[in-house]
Length: 112
Image 1 (cartoon, helix red, strand yellow):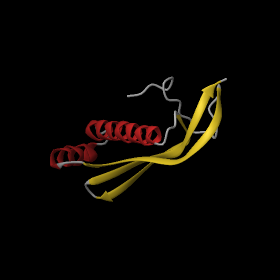
Image 2: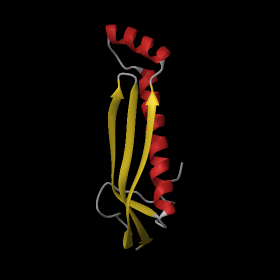
Image 3: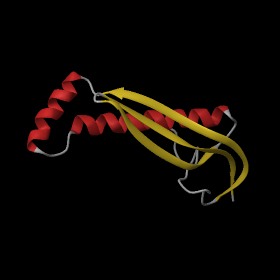
Image 4: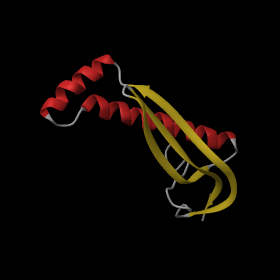
């Protein structure tokens, strides 16, 4: 995973401590994951008693990391070294698949 020092990212329209020199455009990273039969059964049992479903938490964390790595790769392809206005979105595709989308605006920045 790229560190924020190497590739600054912000949910705002700027990055504190950096000056935006150029806007490269819209970028996104996407992944779709299946929950799998084992996870479904375990989650079904856990849902009867309540509490956190660790398998799903792990799956979603890994999915977000993958999508974030992909949006950074997309930004780098455009010649950017940062992303502003970054957002995460998640949608259920079916009762066993989840989509994670990360999107934002690729920019060229320099430290102030």
